[in-house]
Image 1 (spheres, rainbow, N blue to C red):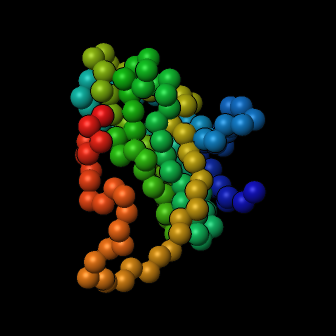
Image 2 (cartoon, rainbow, N blue to C red):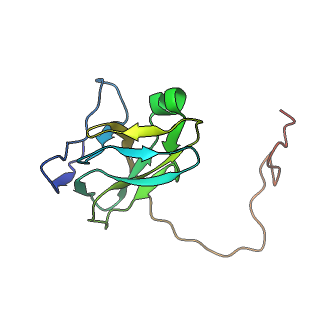
Image 3 (cartoon, rainbow, N blue to C red):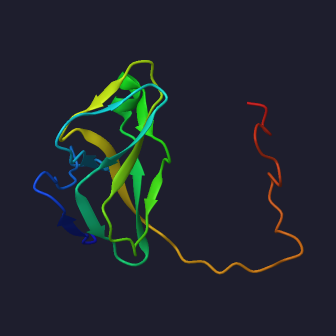
Length: 145
């Protein structure tokens, strides 16, 4: 288990929380005073009221909540959004309404989930040819499925 520093930025901020013992994601909440309406086809940045300190070698990924997607057509636009280990500002979630009805984000609504993952550092090196694989350069429907 790793430890993540968390700084509440206002009195409404809520600590991310796993809803079940085996959940991979920590739900994060809208830290707002009044409803934010997201109309169909509209994008809104929703504040969470928290900043976190992620250790070097890790990242946080912000992902949609399946219930919001299924019931309301609302998702995270840049999914997954990445929070780098050197970022110390407020976490904001870019929500998009893919649905046909306006959606109201209410104070303390669970708006997304956060996953903490390793972020490996790599060295790229130039080659004339890549190593062979069975797949090769086949992509985008190459298996005819």
